[in-house]
Length: 456
Image 1 (cartoon, rainbow, N blue to C red):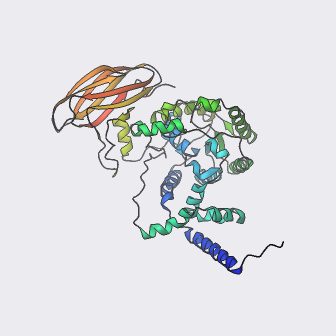
Image 2: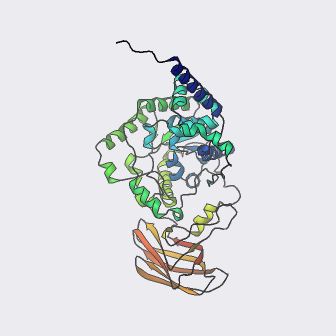
Image 3: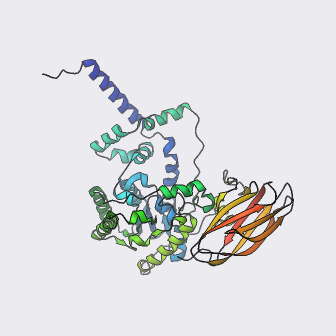
């Protein structure tokens, strides 16, 4: 039986719909989308730093694992050379991240690849299309016709319509991301690590599989570009939670060794082994790759030690100094060092606008927090508190043992308190128990350890 031809009206309707879709996509090119606005600030900030810093430098390249896990400011200070954190977002995909690395690096630089394992498998996704269509039309134009068609046909309808819906509604408020002048993200302080974020970490897992041939081609092309432009390539494995369930999978060691072998074949040296950058879950912020500020400190100190043999014999530019002013998140780091609130604390206030004061408060009659250490140690517990409504006592318990009793007067001034406490290795549970349910304002709440951070 012969197949019936589709009616002309159907073909005409299909052609009209395809033409409309193509027309809207073409009109979308160069129009900002709500979902890509945070990425615009991130990339613009990294490119501005790269233009400002003179002389040969280390440029860290990768997704948000590098953005969160490697502190370029600490690395620069430890090594005495300029270091830029060029970490972006793994959702951009390996091809675009390496494309951006070409923009940041100059002849004489060293690019340190710190690539999440997913980048060897998922080479691009909707995040890539979202950002490029809105903010990098030149990149889209240089794609082959087949890739362009894949992007056009694969763009989700909600993203296609987003720029036009923005024109009908009000502009959303700006997306605040706080960085230091080296490009390090600052919002991963443990004081922002809520119980919900800690719970999400237990569910997150890395996607470790054998690298795709296309990933090998992209790395080979990048290595060739680096040789032509006198850029040296080094690599470090990503900071990652060392889940036992992940390590027990039979494919994991095999696939990670294959990644190592791929880099060796391209002349890219790993400064560490894949099992040496896995860390305890308590040192992570909200994903399997995102360390908190304590985890970043430990990770960076270890990385500095491993990088030192590769830098001593080279000429470098001078380490650059931070710019004027202090980020509000850095104020949090000073005021709430090592404290991870679990319950009983109000949300942090004062971060937006940036010039606002940084403070919080203890609600109800009890607030609880965590302090994580890698070794048993004496510590200094300091606080600046006020009880504007009434005088009350605050008892501090460490691992259910009462260790401090402070009396906070009813006054508009903040009173300073300090005491020495002993912390065990691992999780230390802090409880601040008040004699009344009235809120107490908190300007500072710190636990300082010898050497300012635990040893690895």
